Image: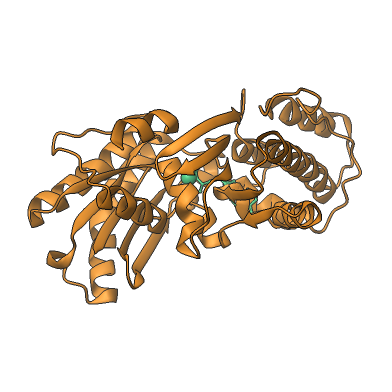
Length: 335
Ligand code: KG4
Ligand code: ZN
């Protein structure tokens, strides 16, 4: 079974061909980072325009690189929700056009479901497991009991972890996206500043990052001669500590000793170190995708699409992009 997958929920235009027996056939990602960097964040209208401009040439490259005949795909997988609505609309319309042209079924995928299954591209994880999704738009903890059965355990009450990286980078004049550059600078600095860890004392599994961002803003206003590397290291230390602490509390609360950490922020080197250290200490099975599959890509959408299609899930041609269907609801809707 081979699927073409389309991912356009934010600022990466991504296409992939995936065979459920042979694995990845082709996988292309076109980042729009350069377009958005001067604005310090993603500009939704520019993102949609870039997807419109780039999807067809990207499909041409994919076909050329792989010498694959698109008539041989079994179905088209695509990100239906959540994301920037204009960007999703472009991807959904594109997926529909390809499906219509070749007379193939359309299979809707939830972007977060794609992230969760990104780890399966390396090796399937046994159920049940916990998933921490840390990206530019989400910081959520889910219990995954089987494909399509997701129980929300906690999430951010304000900014997402990736969003806080991007906002802090903007304050420091480091461009967009902020995660990779802060990750790099933090390795050359020391976490000498004591920044808050919001909600660490609360019993629930929720997160909050906006107070941390404000604390960084106050710090750089107050300290005239700060070293940007030290600010980056101090900020990153706080984010990682919060994410590690809450995730292992979820392990304790549920008794599920299998944890996956996915989404763009899971590419972070310090996060990977700390999660691995804690998991080893507590005997928890930990799965983090390789950095290339942590950030947005279409292979993860293809993998989840294969799972959906093999369960008989297809969408009608009238299907439309949705800005935000919660993952739990999506699981129930389409399974
Ligand atoms: O999953 P993703 O590619 O897109 C969304 O679904 O949002 O995540 C993008 C986010 C951005 O906020 C980016 O700054 C962050 O992931 N990110 C990182 C790293 N690489 C990307 N954050 C921390 N460290 C990194 N190495
Ligand atoms: Zn994402």
